[in-house]
Image (cartoon, rainbow, N blue to C red; front, side, top):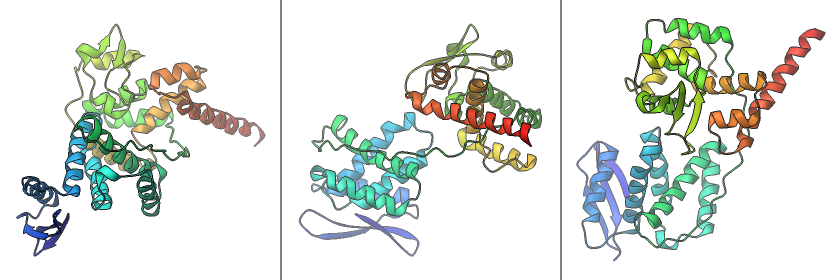
Length: 314
């Protein structure tokens, strides 16, 4: 199945199982709306093409993944790529070689191993949902992700964090959010899902909705306790709105382009390591499944210590 534009309106072009080519107008200038219309029209016919089945599985997969996803647009993009690549391949006959060829295709198109892994995992989720949720007898294919080389992580200084908090003196939401991210090491998505009445007890924050799907407890600093005494959640803004406010602040304060909200999590972990906290404890506070993920912060600490010692010889 293929969508194409003519005079600003999307049309659908597909070949049914009997080999007959069919074209029709989707009556929309929006590709998403046109795709939905085309799927409904084709799936309502007695004969369904393989690519329509794949589209159905992809949409089901995306719907099931939304609860654990930060960005709806990402899933749209990942599954659109699957549809474009596998549209003519029978979902029931997909082989390991097809998956490897798809991976090679991703390598030729995307430079970042992390990006390629995300597209690769989207295919894995489509096949898994096809088997587990839709009862489709598709083959079990193993996926081996690429090893990610850790890039330099941005660590904030104490003065920078103070400047950020002062900048948001009149923006209570952002000031409170920055405080929580700085003092708990939460991911942004985790902080925005905090429900104080159920998640904060005896000055301990329990993160229940997280990447690892394993609840974790984080003792609160006095200023975090103060924040939670005056609010019950962080639902005023969504992730995109928070990111836009943060980028505006970065420009005003002339912070590095590498400075991100996630950098506050890196700063939290690095400071704990610098203060002598064990890797096991830091790993549990961050909610890492694999302690090797936490080891990078110990390495960062060693580099910072070496840089400090060089000052003695300068």
